[in-house]
Structures are given as C-alpha cells and as structure tokens.
Length: 204
Image 1 (cartoon, helix red, strand yellow):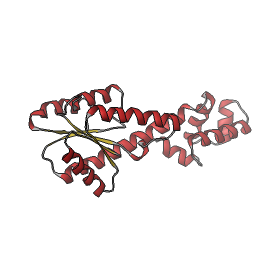
Image 2 (cartoon, helix red, strand yellow):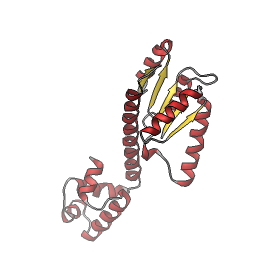
Image 3 (cartoon, rainbow, N blue to C red):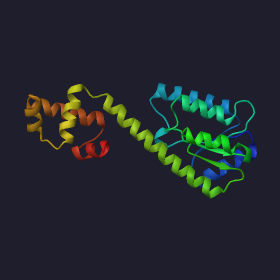
Image 4 (cartoon, one colour):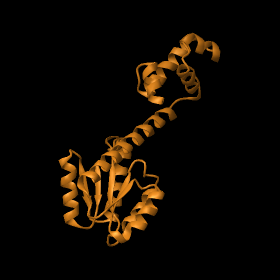
C-alpha cells in the first residue's frame, strides 16, 4: 500500500494514478493528521482481527509543506512510534525544504524528491521502499514466532540449527528421544515450517 500525504488534490490524484499504473494499491490523504488518524484506525483494526497489510509492504509519500500538521511533524510521529522500518518515508519537497529533508534522511527517512520530480525515478524508489517494508514485516513475524517458544524449545532449536540429530539433542539435554521429537514438532508448528532446512532458511 502506497500512502500519499499531500494537500494538493492534483498531486494526490496524479500519484495515485501513477501507482496504479504500476499495479500498486494507493490511498491519498489531504493532510498529515488525516493520515495519522487512518493509521491509528488501521492499527486498531489489525489488533482486533489479527490481520494487516504490512506483509504486502507499505510506503509513505509525504509532502513537507501542508497546512495544519506538516510533513516533518508527521515524520516525527512515525519516528516516535518506531514505524519507519514498516513505513519507509519518501519526502516530496520544494526547493526551500531541502535542508529539512536532508536532516530527516539522517534520522531515517528513505529518500526525498524535489518537485517537480521524475515519475519513473520516484516509483522505482517506491518499489525499493516497499521491498524494505516487506522485509521488515517478515523479520518482525519471525521474531514474534520465536517469542512463542519456551526456554526448552529454544535450546532444542539451537541444537537443531547446529545440525544435531534427535539422539544427539537428547543426549546433550539429558532428555528422551521422544521428548525431543515432541519439542521438535512444537517448534516446527510455532515457526510455521515443515523441515529443519526450511527452519534454517527462515532464521538465517
């Protein structure tokens, strides 16, 4: 999902059309607060349903100068919430805003483009930002799965990843083969994999 935050209707419409021409879902917001309100509403929905769009990748095209809450203030909110990995920000700026945009790059913004910008170059960077977002979402999902493992399951996991067979794992931990098999099954189930090779690939 590409989030377009710009107070100019013509720019939002043009960017939405450009995104759709590349097969990307896009949503426009006329101001910074409207975007943050929508973000809060979506976060609440995701928490309630256990779903979300992060796995598809998200990116924010953020205008710097807007009435009310400007782009820098919106960016500050995303930084404070720790959302830049999931929501990479590409600033759209006028010439006078470049120093602010450069400062934001130092604080984690993905990129900035001066208006008028090259459509293809902008969308190429959007594609890269979406890829980064998908990678961050996947890493977060793996960390969440790991957090569900018990202390013993983490011990078994480490020994499996080291290439040990069940018998060796049992000997090292002083437990039965059957117990190792049970732990192994639980690990595979929680990590959503079917083989040790797939598990290793997930955690590399």
